[in-house]
Amino acid sequence: MVIGVTPNLEARKAFEFQLANALNAYKINTMQSVVAFESVFHDAKRTEAEIKAQVDTLLSVGYDTVLMSAVKGVNEKASYSSKSAKTDYRLRKFIGYYLLYQEALFNQDYYTRYKVYTIETSLYHLEKVGRSNLVWTGFYDLVDPTDMKETIDLYVKAVIKALEKEHIIEK
Image (cartoon, rainbow, N blue to C red):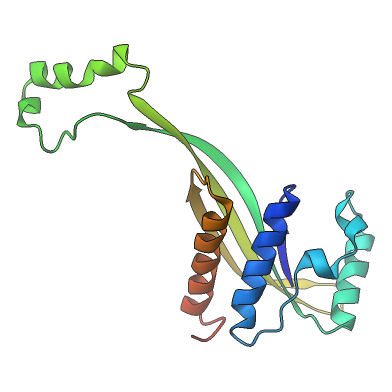
C-alpha cells in the first residue's frame, strides 16, 4: 500500500500513482491509498480503533506492507547572489571584501530566498496482532519545488534508488 500524506488531493493521487507504478515494475503488487481506502477515511481524524480496523481490512485482502510519505518540515533558506569569493583575489584585503559584500546593505535582491521541504518516507510491515514493524525510513530534501510532475518524478526515483540500495527491492 502506498500512502502520500498531503492535503493536496491532486498531488497525493499523482504521487501514489507514480510510486505504485514504479513498484509494480519490480513485480510488487501495489495499491494506492486513494483507491484502497474509502474516500471518507481521509476526511476526518481517526481513532486508533478505526485505523486498526483499516489495517485489518488491508491484511484481509492480502496487503502486508505500507509505504508512507509525509512532509515533516519546511525551512526557508537564503543564498547569496554575488560573485564567488573563491575567484576574487581582491578579497585578501579588507577593502576588497567590503566593496564586494556591501551590496547586501543596499540591494534587496542580494539574497535569493527559497524553501526546502523535508519529506520522510517510512516502510512498515503489517501484522495481524495489531502491531506494525518499521522496516525502513528515508529522509529527502526537496529544494523549492515548482513543477509538481518533475518533483514527483525526482522523489519517486530517489525512493526507488534508496530501496534498491538497502536491498529491500532487487534491481
